[in-house]
Image (cartoon, rainbow, N blue to C red):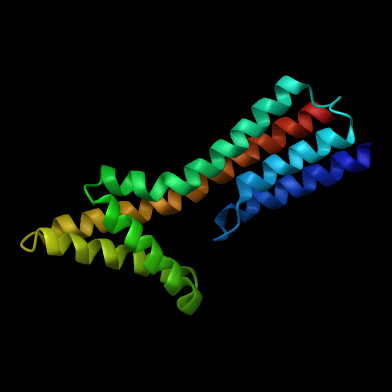
Length: 159
């Protein structure tokens, strides 16, 4: 079964790295990898408690990735609607401009929405757009850290 463990660990490493790739549900793929490995061992390893903990952390990583932009935008003072629209614009621009399009679309939309709300406060609009972008990018980083921890814990549990 060592080869199955090696394959699972390799996949977990791939899913950790894919945290920075748009549209890849890395946390969900990690959870499925863990469950798949446990299935191959008849749920003998890792223990059921360890498996549940690792799956929950993997799913938490996905939730963090999904919610980071909205939460940071709200904390920065931008409306949830402007962050959501900005994310959609960023995703559309992602196909045209690559990763820069995601950042430009999100920051530009939040900036313009903020100016529409408070037309006299340019600094506030810049701050809101920067915080929204930092939140979206930090969500990927936090997901990678969580999935890296899952990978390390899984490797420790099965070897």
